[in-house]
Amino acid sequence: MEDGEGPSNVGGFFLMAVKPTMDFDFGFTAMDADELDAVQSVKQEAAVSSKEALSLQEKCDTLYNMIQPLLNNLQKNPEKDYIYWPNRMEKVEAFGDSLTAVYKG
Image 1: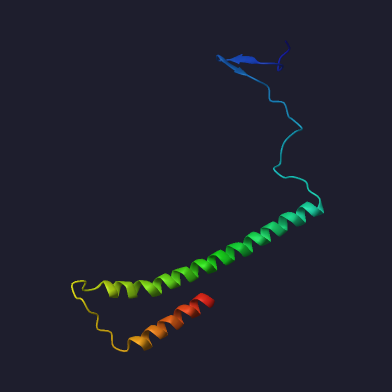
Image 2: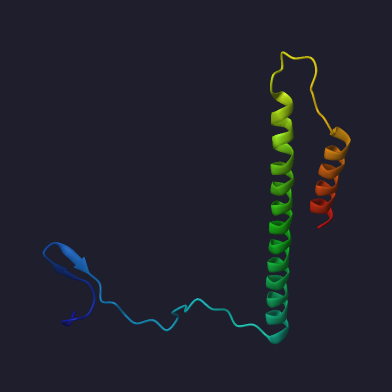
């Protein structure tokens, strides 16, 4: 074997000569215009769906934050049999209107 060819034994370690290869992968894939349009369309649909999901989550959070104080107040003083609630109809109707506005908004 001539110098510089094949494995060599240097200090008990075998060294292999590194040969350049022509099959290096740069990490991209070629596609035609139709495939590119399809990928871009799917990305746009995903973005719209993500926005819609975020909007629905915000609505759910708002409704939860509106209802939770009512439930907390109803749980106060469980030893009492009656709840004193003056102007109940007006307050319940206003609360219902608020819930409807969030639901439809």
